[in-house]
Image (cartoon, rainbow, N blue to C red; front, side, top):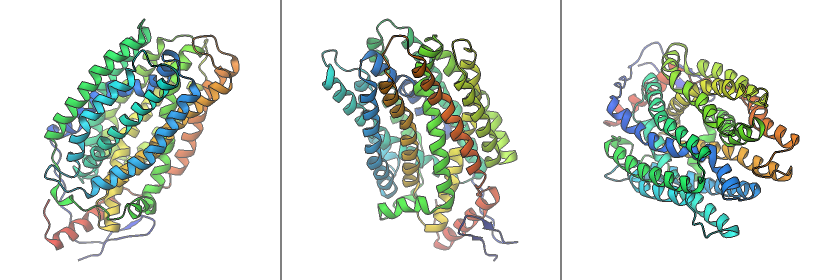
Length: 471
């Protein structure tokens, strides 16, 4: 029997012979659809959350941008507690419904209810009380969403250990999920042209909340879950979180996720402001996000094949470079260069399509490497830490936008100064482009490839056989 070793920095030395791990069978489409279906319902409302919540609160509810920036900051601080806790507890949960599915069932209704409440504050509430209502509802929704998304993401990493089938799982999930994003895009357009945006948001959030609750509950019923992973999480939340940072592959990916999340959030949050106040085409926001979303569906099948042929790392590196150029295009948007409202988002969308497929697949590989190091299955903890980094990074554009616009004298629904317009464009395009350039250079150091992952799986299978375990 030949030894398989993995070095401290993550490089793998493969023996010349030895037992081959049994290759995981391809997941049936029914399982992939059950895993992906909630993204259809989420896509409807998340499009509005990401692209219009800030503007809805400042321009419709008339909450000061700085106040919204503070609310986003408070929400991220709360995430710093709730995300790791949900990940750690779901890793250690023992239930006849599964360590992931029990959490997903419990979160379904609260998500729908709090989603409706956030977008439907009573008309009689104004001033400070309105800010408190929005803040509490936002925190409640984020908590319920965490209780669902962390276990759901962990379950996705458990469904298969096959290096390429993971790309297929997350690629098809990405495509299915964009059905909801397309519906959300139509809703966004209708929101921008609605005379009574407050009433429209209330009706839409009611439909979205019901859809999320129903679809999440149904999909959770249909998903399988591995019994042999129950109770195999860490017994110490601080050590579990520390393992995420001690894992060399994970540390690098945390940086990349922070950069990606910052860029995508800038596009979502500032898009309505740039199309309205810079390009003076407020209804063009729907076309802009259409240019961003369409390539993600069109190129997804292509990236699934290219990842298998050229490798996940190489493909993602090329996509990062393309994304950086796309954001530079967004910085160039003026009233005379409105065409960049389409060109820039299209380039960014192509890059985002690759990241959405490759990133979760790589994440699952890294979690296998953690099991090699620790003997534990901590999908929830890993997803919690990664999501926390993403949430903080995605909140930065909102906070920066809120404080910068307030400081520079932004007034809603009027012509803005050239300084305000330039600041919008810089936060919208220039800063994310610089971040992606740095991220590309950092990701060159990533080393967990297909061969190294195969060695890890062989060792894990050998350990399981020695224990006499079955899935």
